[in-house]
Image (tube, rainbow, N blue to C red):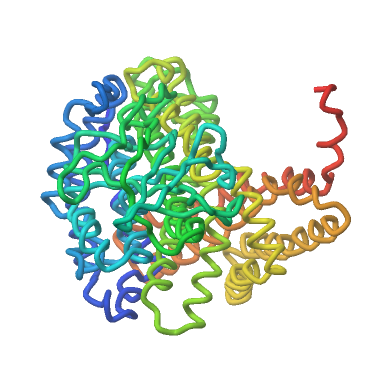
Length: 592
């Protein structure tokens, strides 16, 4: 059966055919040298590293896990050597500021790199992946001295970073955190407390680990207004071992190759980032982009599962097609002949490739927000990010897990055993719906903060794009049904929003009751737009003449499948939203 391969052709389709990535980069002076040839070369090198180095370590990491010896963590066999290759090739510096040793390539290519690395080996990819938030936080909120001390090493990759937010008594409700920061005469702070669930919190891959830590000053106000942010390195700049130690490793369902740690800060030396009591503001610098990274995790597990189950379905012989033998010389037909297996494969294909379109579109908004000098253009990109970040994070992780499960189902009983790697994919995928804010948290953020609190302004940014697209293609006879259906859903999206808003004026609980269904509805309509866009673009390319007509025809047929089989799921979400919140609150607590 085929080994993992980077989905290079689909990446190229989304980047170049759909989104004119070269033109996108040329519109910003700082990115103007990022040509199609440069991007293709990057993808080619990524493919070599991911396929030949990282993918073979996927099962190794799962089976060996990480080992805690005293306070030090040993990563699985081959992980350290792979990281050394990663650093030597310059991958950590790719999308960072040249002033600090970076290569200055667009942020969107960093998302593509994360997808590539993560699909090959998500547990390994978390080690360099967690550094991104630390780098961005220090770059935007740190002092010049902090940037020179920490950012240069993080960009080079010889140091890695973490985010230390969660404590045992507070998960999402960070206003309850208890970690203390005591000011010292030399301008530093003494950090005392315990953080849990810290991914890549201790390991042997890099020389140093830079922890970004939320803590409270002695005179801090209560709640979220009293949180400050600190740099707490494992080793201080002078080489002294700091008083931050791994107390234990979490025993987890999946991602065994990544060290998820309990970290004890026993009077550790820390350095304030930004303003006192403004840590939550600075934290969202990396949290929002970390959520987009988690959205990509959903894509990674969907892609891996699809590749595995597609190869298996082509090889596995079982039963005969009801319409007659498809493999008459063999004892049975390949299971891909059976409609229900086709259903599972096409669902994976449509959600995976549609998710890639969404992920790349969102990543390109990051480039615009970072590099545009037009304030209105920057605002539009920011509004689109505000709307699409919770949709991408929650919808893509939910559907990524669905795809991982469908892949396992395609294997039947063979999927439940370790040999094929698909049961690991299911276990590894499950965490994505939990960290960086659960699906319910993302849904409340989307509906409450991003849509209703802006009186629908952020939503209209995107629905206007869909409206213009539908209007421009209204006379397209081949895709009339798709365009009409998309236009109807786009209008309904606004109507649903208004309906929930009116109900919430009488009962605020209506927002919580509708939120997850609203988010999933939003996800399905968002992917419908991208699939309609892809189908029309594919037809244009075929009509212009191409040697890859079959590839582009597959895009059209997958779009038709999406509209016929997956978009109708919105009907259930609409019915649930209209039912209101009362059915959720009808039971007394004692009746559960």
